[in-house]
Amino acid sequence: PPRTVNSVISAANGFLGWLGWREYQLLGRISIADDVQPELTRTEYLRLLQAAKLLDKERGYLLVKLFATTPLNVQELDKVTVEAVTEGRIVTSPSGIKTLIKLPACLQEELLHFARREGRLTGPLFVTKEGRPLNRTYVCTIIRQLCPAAQVPEEKGNPRCLKRLYQNTLATIESNVALLVEQAL
Image (cartoon, rainbow, N blue to C red; front, side, top):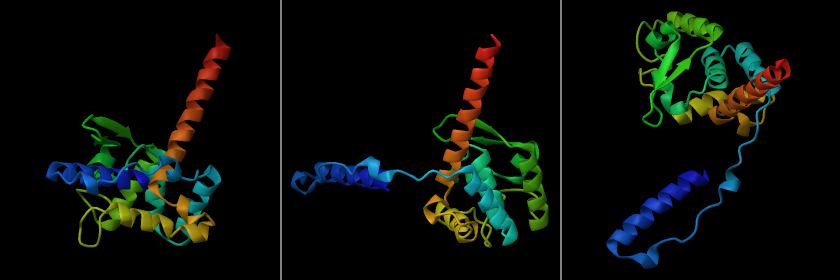
């Protein structure tokens, strides 16, 4: 994505400047407008869940549901532990600021059933066969594998689109509540 490329260019330019090789520095930035993510609709989200169920891909189902119902970032997936799920809340610190993410009761129940079936008593819930937490690439692969069966474009099959769906849904609910409060006054 352009943001990643821009950060690498910036770091390389800083290093080249430190060496005194300014003639090798790249000027300009890649436009962020090119990085527009497609919007995932609620219908497409439901089709992803249905496809995961039909394909018996429980981990994919839970990942889709987790990212669409919480503000969790992929890099914080290791914070989804059996202990955190049991408490019903995940504590993260994405920017050094402690954040509490409350799990919806239905998701909490499904995650606990998954932990029991997988034999996980403690630690991260989503891990590889070797027991290491899933990385971002693997999470995206798991979600994208559901897209053909769900008839959802693959570029929409990622945690970022699911998180945007969560944010849009939350914003809609908040504006509806604000409207109701305004009408009640």
